[in-house]
Structures are given as C-alpha cells and as structure tokens.
Image: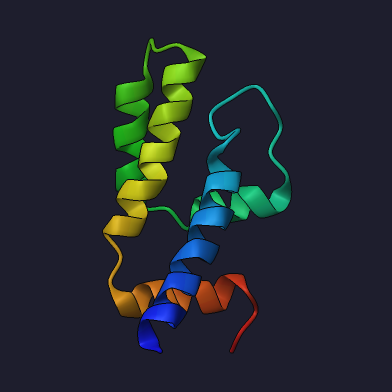
Length: 92
C-alpha cells in the first residue's frame, strides 16, 4: 500500500519537474507555474547544471536539464518528497 502511494508521489513530482525544466535556460518563455516549480530546485543543482551546460548543444542541454530533475528527485528524503508533493498539489 505504501509503495503504491510513494510511486504516485514520485510520478507526479517527475511529471511536474520535467515539464518545468523543458524550457528552463532556453529562449522559450516559461509560464509562471513552471518558473515556480523550477524555483523549488536547489541552487546547488541549478549551478551544477549551468557549469556543465556551458557551450553545449541544445540537445545536450536538454539532457542535462533532465539529469537536473533526476538528481534533485534522487536526493530527496521520503518526507521531503511527500511535503513537496503536497505543496505542489494544494494538499494541506
């Protein structure tokens, strides 16, 4: 039962985070929600992305943005992931 709930939380977080970073650090304008979702990601992860992305092609930058999300999610504790899920979905 708990594994199903955890899987749903991770699926939801990945969906929202991947959508939010697709156009992060590109010329395409991000909507307000995507900007807010990106703001949840630690500056440490975003700075590491920027260092690695410098001088790379757009395809390589997209790959690095996806790694940014997976690194961020993998670094979450269960309780942080649950709390972030609740915040992103308006659950109090």
